[in-house]
Amino acid sequence: MLTRCNTPRISNRLSNSLGYAGGIADRRQIVTWLVISALAGGCERPGAGDGEIVIGSSPTGVPFSFVDPWTNQLTGAIVDVATAAAQMAGFRPDLKITPFSALIPSLLADKIDVIAAAMLRNPEREKIVAFTDPVFAYAGGLAVRADNGNSYPDLQSLREVRVGAQVGTRFLDQLKEAGVRQTPTYENLGDLMRDLKHGRIEAVYGDAPIMAYQLREGPKLPVRLAEEFTPPVAEDVCLVLRKESPLLPKLNEAIGALHKRAIPDIKQKWGLK
Image (cartoon, rainbow, N blue to C red; front, side, top):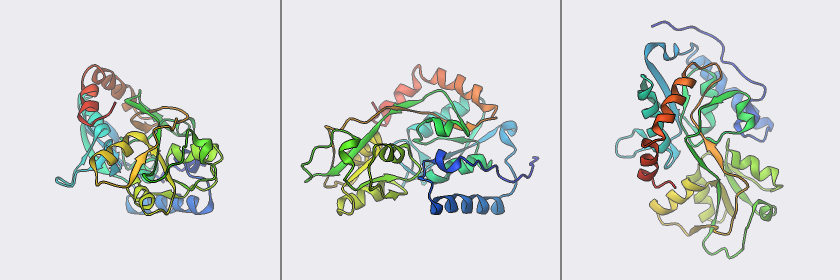
């Protein structure tokens, strides 16, 4: 099996496309990760020519992508779709656990071939990566403590509220665009919910279906979803590839076929609307 060695491609728009605010610490974190990645691996993957594609998924995005504690394997709705699409396109899927904030850097550094995660398509990301046809679509949701009787109809009503969000997501961008001043960031929704429970933050803005699933299936928390809240927009969840990837038309063809029955069955399996 042949490989070729190159320096990982680094875009000057990378931090914005990842959803970071663009501060010095954030840029250092990204650059540090890429340097470590280059030193650790160094060589590009040979790509899909060997019949295998590596699919990177985050381990904390229940029900879209997460690690099953019983099997220690990646699973979830988007993992099911990516696996089925890869197999339908004639490839052997190899699932690789990758933190959400490292998914795009891993893709650009040729450490993975496809991203399968709750990653929303947006214009900034489209500048540096390619998206397949949509698989799911959803909007953000707002979680507050159960004893919080205030009404939050939209993002503008949160401008003076301490609202946590997951780093590298569209939801952090939307909070800043709406003028929300206090937006502490976290690596995953589990940590966000923990700090909301203990009163360290006043609200959580994030993936509505993920938070609904966690509150429905996970440990009981003194937390509720704000039913009066209307998010600004629903956005598409797709598989993500490098711009030059020859996999794109093949996966799009497979996704089109999966929409006829498999994807509705997967959505029902994972309790997605």
